Length: 391
Image 1 (cartoon, rainbow, N blue to C red):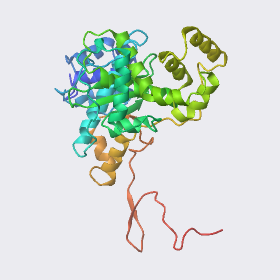
Image 2: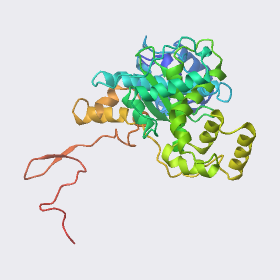
Image 3: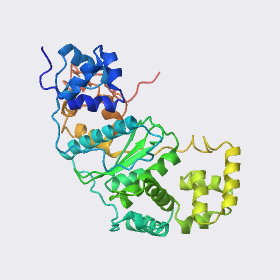
Image 4: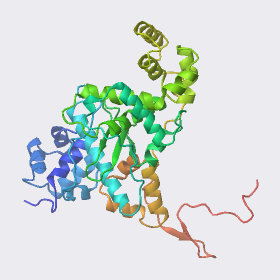
């Protein structure tokens, strides 16, 4: 039986899991049996050319993706601290892990031509995170600000700050309850990664997610055998202390009230809910006061959407997009060459690097002006002598 030369069954598993498609569903989409998909993935058989074309089409991946040899540097799901182990399904976590490996492969490709910022994260020599107290974490957050020269005021753009200090940040559609974001230190390339959920349209919540995952990177490079709830509690405390340092936040808080929190939200870019929790942490609010605060918070309808949520701009990762733009602008690689080099769909590259939709579409053939012979890309605007014509 004629199959597909060079087909790698494990890549079909990878592509299917990255799209969160069960094997049975993919089989229906392609018009083959469930058993056939399992045989393809195990490497016992390879799909006929027409089936291969359908698999690539249904998974929105180029056929080259399925022929890419397995990489000994590919990492497992180990080392990722998931936000929740219960609400997110195993399939959802595997989809996110697969997408993370794509980000890592893209970064490795970019490093072949460009010097990306080296990681400059503070190292506190934490041997066993289980022994950390909340007071320790407050100190580490303060030392992080000191190391990076942030002072005690609001952080203008946390995502940009992380990227400038060597953290690879990407915003992806995670489409999974309980998976707002996740992070890992890559043993393969020694780089820290943070993946934020693009599903979340609140600037302050996305920013807090970034601070939370940064907390994992700083505190939890060694997590084997540690209680998941404790890891999460420590990361939340680090995020609160980093974004709302006690000294300056308390000084500006004229009263522990919802109206006061609302007035500070634009300046500190932290949610009102996070300010309530911070005041509880710092014992500005007692347990009964905190409970009443949450009741009033819910009565105002802020559980789903807070004031300013639809106004404040969401921080956007910039590093990867600028890297691709530099490759193209400086003539290192063309957009078409990048699509050949990287076996992913153009839309995946655009999402991962936060590039405009359609960025990798072919620019089209060159056209020339008859008199000057100057080459111009198709669709370019030719300037009129003396400026824009007047009506």
